Amino acid sequence: MQDTMSTASQRRTFAIISHPDAGKTTLTEKLLLYGGAIHLAGSVKARKAQKHAVSDWMEIEKQRGISVTSSVLQFDYQGYRVNILDTPGHQDFSEDTYRTLMAADSAVMLIDVAKGVEEQTKKLFRVCKQRGIPIFTFVNKLDHFGRNPFDLMEEIEKTLGIRAYPMNWPVGVDGNYKGIYNRRQARVELFDKDSSHGQKMVASTAGSVDDPVFRQLLGEEIHQSLCDDIALLDMAGDQFDPEKVAHGELTPMFFGSAMTNFGVQPFLESFLELAPPPAPRISSAGPIRPDSADFSAFIFKIQANMNPAHRDRIVFMRICSGKFERGMTVYHVQSAKQVRLSQPQQFLAQDRTIVEEAFPGDIIGVFDPGMFGIGDTLCQVGRDFRFQGFPVFPPEQFARVQAKDTMKRKQFLKGMTQITQEGAVQVFRQPDMVESFIIGAVGSLQFDVLQYRLKQEYGVDILMNTLPYGVARWLEGENLNLKALKGLDNGMVVQDIKERPLILISNEWQLNWLRERNPGVEFQATPSDP
Ligand code: GDP
Image 1 (cartoon, rainbow, N blue to C red):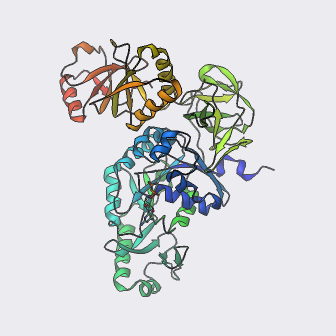
Image 2: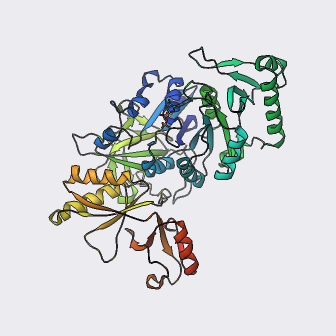
Image 3: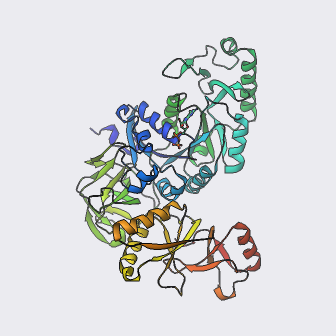
């Protein structure tokens, strides 16, 4: 008999996207708590408080008290196996976060009720939207004063271009909230400040917001305001449409408070029911279905030096089909070689554990013999296909780097090659400059990581000068003539590692100016053949 936990359909693999301080760490921890992984509670926080934590592999993380790496948190809940892809919270590490989103089947967008949609959330949202994965919204900190929920809905719709369907609704007037009204179950749930559970359920007898029980409980003013809101939502709001949710066009919206546990469990249960199991993945051999018997996976993250005693690199892969078994030999498509996956590990909140078997939707880490790259495909021996490549995320910070000591040029090149293979930074060159590279990243802290690692691991000190650019655009178009580009006085032309030309410029304003002056040239945020 097959264990239910060994099927792809029971898996829910997702990431939480948010702006720093919205409460991601707190929510993650509460989800673990409800998932029965109680011994893990506190561990997510502890990581942030830079005690012993899985992600303290890199010294720099400890110094800064932030998480550079990401791992996966796994627990079972009511017949589901839940994989939360833990993404670095600090905004400087969004490139890694972007990649992690490639391995998720859905995303939970966490918003602070007082702050609404913030910058980092917008960026991460865009990546989810591009992938067309379902996005769920959790509006957090409802125990605090917050913004009007209609305003928040409008903001989500206007700034993110996705419709919102409130699954529950704040009860209260003028941002002073008492609890939530569960629309599906027609039930009011109030904060219970005295209880450690932080939650009290009040069932409606009539199953409607008009139920006199609610009026008595809430008082006339609050009850009337709730009735008006619900009437408006029912009349003018979107219908709940699972198809639209599945395509990322409608986001189920929940309100709650992670800190006081309020609304977390109902959210988890609704989410698990509505969130999709692993879906087929596009490959050069057509869609690869999760229930296909042949093993396949792709690599979405490479992490060096998790164990400072060894200079190891660990690659994280997401399993897409078949079954992974410890010690199995698979085919690495990019190198056309067979490789034995000997030390498979799963990274739970507290420790690494050796994995005996894993299934579609699961994430495992294996030691890299030095052959793997981001986006690579692994498949059953005898099969040969590639999963769709990863998009290039446009860098927004740039610097020129070179070895301080020219005698160390060789180590410098080796270090740059290996570290950029991991995808920590993107590397560009100016065609006439041989000693130095231009590096680009989504966040500038990645530069510090590069500098630190070149010194620690390769013994190379570098000179690094940040460059005053904020926008990169790949240049395309028929008969592209770089010499004839007009109006590029304040920009720089460089090449990426595939020798495709791009320009580095200050801002969008300058970009528009260039567009006007060079009508035959296409300025692409990412190269069209990744
Ligand atoms: P992260 O940066 O997104 O991981 O955010 P944290 O989980 O560390 O939370 C940031 C701050 O918000 C912390 O001080 C939390 O205690 C606080 N916080 C998280 N959830 C809530 C909530 O539901 N209500 C209130 N009032 N504070 C919260």
